[in-house]
Image (cartoon, rainbow, N blue to C red; front, top):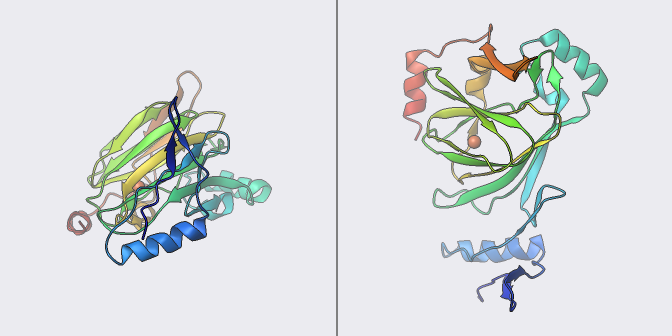
Length: 241
Ligand SMILES: [Fe+2]
């Protein structure tokens, strides 16, 4: 099979040629994967739609699907009634295989808003293979990458366009939009990492909440519902590499 390269060289610089259809890409990669070989691939990052083009899929998460992630359940119920069908965040990505020697790269777009004083955020997860790391690069907006290690130590990395954050192995992570516009990030992580949402549900969130602050814009406050992880649970995740 011929190697497909989607760049051509002009006198001035490298430009993208129109890429093939997704169906062509998939059948090509299926054929190639039989011999454990993937050809190079180039795509466009559309700065207006905030999508990778072409991409291999993604998902949309609606506000109604995020119950029990916010501390103020009464405020969440009110939001559910008025805006439950609105999109909270969406992801589109390039996911060719789920092999450990491959990468998934995608864009996450998180809408602005608050539930009580708590900013809109993603559900958050630990990687199912907990020793897998990830990088996030801020494309637009103003947000926080909230990270928590298995012992409950929290780090909040403030992100603006151009910020790059590295999430180490064994850190639970979520995005929080502390701005008034969408918060968009480009991420990349090993394709066999998987996502474990149960760890966040079990702990009833992260140890700290990101809430509005009149003076500084945002601050971290203790999560009153937080359940500290037992030693046996921590050891279970540590072995999940
Ligand atoms: Fe992740």
